[in-house]
Length: 295
Image (cartoon, rainbow, N blue to C red; front, top):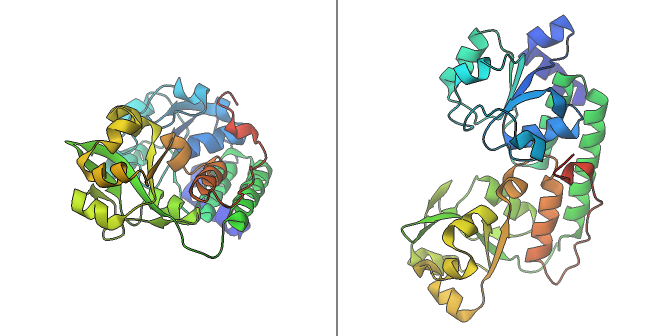
């Protein structure tokens, strides 16, 4: 399977594979891809990243190529890259086509939030950068860590209901439905997404929130700070009933750590699983170099 994946990625970037040259000037659009590049030991080849690529620290100080879904061809080409790594939702499509027309090899990562999709992205970056053996080792470690977490998650009993809050504008929470990264993380951690009546992110009314009846409210540290902290979140009308009951618990993590879907995903999954299954011991994973902000 790995050989097939590598072959497919080479076909996608024929100018690199046919010439037998490894790219030395790379731009990355997607935080997970940026983290994979560093984890494979070729972070020094990055010459630009998108605005979501905030980890590790040395990536955050690189020239910016714009927001993931609103990239600019001129800004990217000014960095003189010979390879662009992009997530499936990077764009707009017209910009990516303009980059290809200008002769830039653009590799699009496989879509998906499951561990296998992350592993496929690791293989893609390894193939494109001449780090196949390092990518195979990183894949194996990543999938082993995922398996350890999943093995420790309770297989029976009621599953905790988790509501993911993205943001709150005009006191109306924007929460995750089906087919989102947050929903995938909740399911992988052994929980149930408390909102499954729709896909994507939509505002949730107080009435709908009561029906959702979450045991946990999951959000990002950035969203919680923007709201003014935990107490401000629980003061929102939608949360009032549960806040008074004292039943709901609020969990927050760094947005890129929780939803970046790069090498750190296994550890983020472990942290989430341990939080929503307090009665079940979810062992800590071994420390990995790519967890360090300075790696």
